[in-house]
Length: 410
Image (cartoon, rainbow, N blue to C red):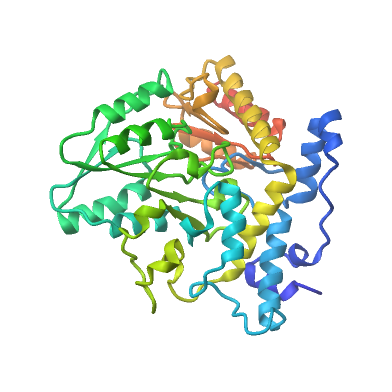
């Protein structure tokens, strides 16, 4: 069966590579019956079984059929040497201009300023390790950063004696302006780098990225944005943010398979960044951002999957995707409020996309999680329980989640 061997390598059923994929539903259906349109997207474009309610897209998204097919087919074609003559089935030594252009167009930046990595953590570690900072120089961040984002700066502190400091963000916030004021007012005389998440991982709150970066630049600071949750979730271009460096995780909201990420740097800042992993030509600055991709042989099939994810999103439409996932987030927020569950996410469209965070400290978490597992409802564990829906999420999935919460509360 065509594609079966490649599918086996991926741990996928052979049908993932072999089965034909139905075309996307006619956009006219979205106008006449939007729920039917999205049901068909789930049923025809994803392998999610009807019994599964997946509400943890913020950790690792679900790749649709066209993405899995692209990965499997590239593995098979490279094994059969049916790729173009003299083209190595890899990345790690190549510029990959065509691939980078497609992704750059989607995330909103110049191709030459964009590099592929394996994930946002790798990109952030590269940035932290590559900046020249002296002992005593300070990196200011929020107290709600993801552990992987903070780790690179912690390593630099342990090894080189820089300082790190956290500004405490209030929960829930009153407005985006409040978050900007808290972070910017914490800047001190030794602050050299301002590091923050575009969307906070634990709460889903959207930071006022452009406003923060604009003020930070007037103060001569280097700004680094952890954009792991940004691209594909909210409608913003990287080149609108105004930061100096940026890291992204396409496997969350861009339909990409796990194992690919992005690193972006402002053109005039890229020369100031030292690469951490190098091959021959590591110092060729004419490559611009691409020189951070020269890290040795890697699985190019994953990159083919990322590009397929971009094409899939473009075919549906970024605006249509955002409207759907934000609608689901509003529904989740409303259902929680109706049940008197404390909602960390404020009722302000500027401050959330598709991530809604609930305060579950009053619940028996072990009992709650056991019931979610029994009902095949996939959520992230924690007293701040985060719901993150994508276009494969059904309203009934949210209903099932809140039915369990009601049952456990008694």
